[in-house]
Amino acid sequence: MPARIRCRCALHCCLCSEPWRRQHVWHLTRLVSQRLGVPAASPIIPLVVGNESASLQLSRRLLARGFHVPAIRPPTVPAGTCRLRVSLSAAHTRAHVEALLLVLQEELQQIPGTRLAALPHVVAAQQQGQFECLAAGGSIEQQQQQQGDV
Image (cartoon, rainbow, N blue to C red; front, side, top):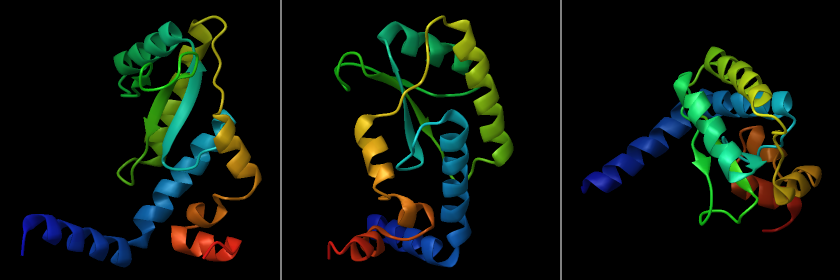
């Protein structure tokens, strides 16, 4: 059996036998979302800063304090929508996330006029309740069935 298929089988086995991993990462996702007031559609959370130089400065300041939160800027995203990308995993602890949130708040205060915003399509999707099933540990298929899309 090719290595790629063995890896995929192992991943499926892990997801089925260890649902706590998914639950844990969604718990961390909700924590970040609630504390920052920015909706999160997945454990990869875009924090829109807007300005390219502020995004880069904030990313560098976070890295200097031990947090790898890359700045995403043009041409990857449209000008004026530069963002930080927070990527959470089941390997992160609540203490890791709490520390990131504390440092992020401190560093935001050091860059005048900088604040975080959410992506409009993520806000709209959250308002329509499109993330509730996924955040509760459901699958995309379950979410579509609940919405009558299947």
